[in-house]
Image (cartoon, rainbow, N blue to C red; front, side, top):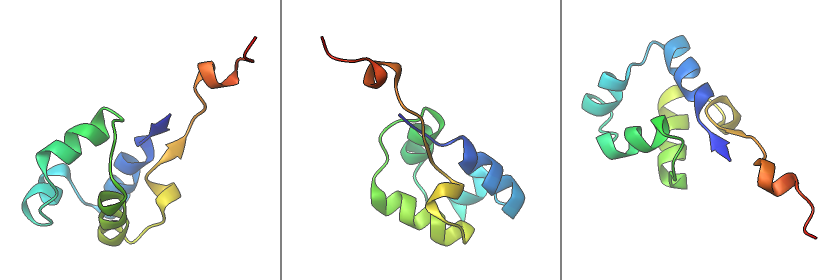
Length: 74
């Protein structure tokens, strides 16, 4: 599973709020909602966020293996 917990930390460190993303950088409310819920986000949005925050992908997203993926198939 991809989680975006680091995004909120990076945004805070950069002094960029969700309001600012919406109104100054025109990131859609739907995209922000998907990020909050760790939903599907396209690579264009991830690239845009990295450009806005001047950061690397690993500063906003993290891969955490699902428990189901760790089970062997019998």
